[in-house]
Image (cartoon, rainbow over all chains, first blue to last red; front, side, top):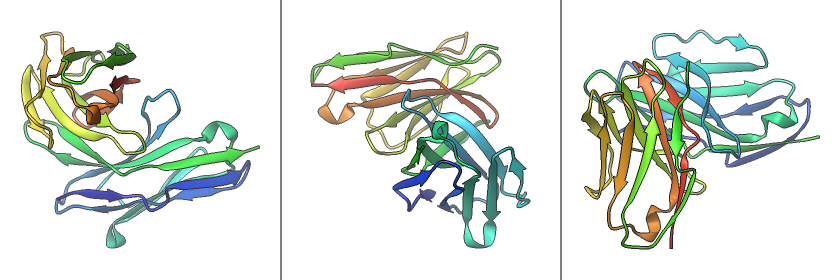
Length: 117
Length: 110
């Protein structure tokens, strides 16, 4: 079975602080994708980043960066110099092959990030 | 390119009734997936449609059913509504492993 755990339920920071969101996953698949999504109060899931299981290179994209470690099954996400507009619920998700030609997503329970001015 | 549009945005139904939710997929996307997100939880996979056929299903009872049309838009139907069906229903269109989500339909069952 596949599982995604986000141990942090809520995080509150002050603007300009760096914040790291933790994600631990379980899967028996050798080929999979990991995602981070942002969900503002409007409800839409906004795609942030994706990583495949064969690429552990960690990168930085603007204020976002991620740390993918297969040895610990972790896929942590960092926002540098947080802003009030970053306030949202953040979901980590695991994509597995579900038959046919496409994949389904398994989500964690989310982390509510509040950035205070 | 157009995004994913869901309708209606909000809906209130009575227990036992039936409901139909609609989703238009993003241009070029041939697969539609539906997710249920209860309050304070992550989205749960309901099912996926690829080329008008169901292509994978999560742990949801048969009263949750769907359709996909030739233009790749989709419907989610829920019969015999229960109070626990109250949730945000999200539709995602995809091509391969790239997903685009709609803003969802907030269903309240009273």
